[in-house]
Amino acid sequence: MTTALISHSDCLNHVTPEGHPERVARLEHLLHALAPLDLLRLAAPPASDADIGRIHPQRYIERIAAAEPAEGETQLDGDTWMSPGSMQAARRAAGSVIRAVDAVSSREVSNAFCGVRPPGHHAERETPMGFCIFGNAALAAQYALDHHGLSRVAIVDFDVHHGNGTQDLIWDEDRVLLISSHQSPLWPGTGDATETGGHGNVLNIPLPPGSDGAEMRAAYEAQVFPRLNAFAPDLLILSAGFDAHTDDPLAQLDWNTEDFRWLTRALCQIAAKHCRGRLVSVLEGGYDLAALAASGRAHVEELIEAGK
Ligand SMILES: [Zn+2]
Image (tube, rainbow, N blue to C red; front, side, top):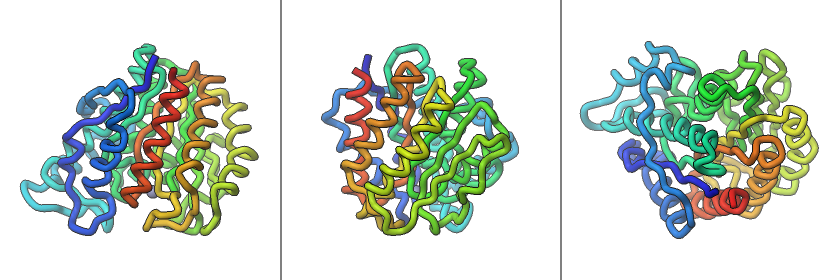
């Protein structure tokens, strides 16, 4: 058994304007850092409308497709842009998690990391937002439930920003537990601990600006791990953002590379205990290139270790 790295060069054709933090170089740096690792490299297939339609209405998919420019870049909202190739990149990103869920479900691999962009956890049902177009993590969960017949799926979102899109997409899905830790206050401003989902299926863990890895570890040990153990998921999905790193320019948490390693190891142990190791991780944020590469590599090294 091994760990899959699921990606596609089409994800590099989603081009954002000069100076935009969610840029092509992010994925290039991360994939370069992962190049020496022993991984089963799989191509992300493009998700069909029917795939994406599990979480977004067809009119939204068509609206996004129609917004793609023939040349240059066009703005979907204040932060979210499309270039020629963005729709295919977004389809590959969505398709990567479907391939990952299939691969861990069939025992082709133990676990999988989807190194893709655009990210997904801010995209709401009919609203692109925060560099995100389709809700990749929520799609992974919905696909695992509906296609593979799993009973319970947990999503842990450790990106520094609240996973508002994932929360919106799974709010009424009582078979999904979403746990999001994030800096608060911080954009997008949601993710208060009082937001608990339509069925008590959301746990938000706001962390104060300037808090470090020790505070993160304490919060996960006190709140996240007990909740995951009580829920006993069949599959664990990670929204893996690395922008809680102390060097990240978009936020003010002070995690370091070893904190991401610790967290990944702990989550893999939970997957081993409840999910027969089945874990799918998908890239979200992380905007300091060196921090993203180092933290992402530590994350994937732990997946490999757990998958042996
Ligand atoms: Zn983020």
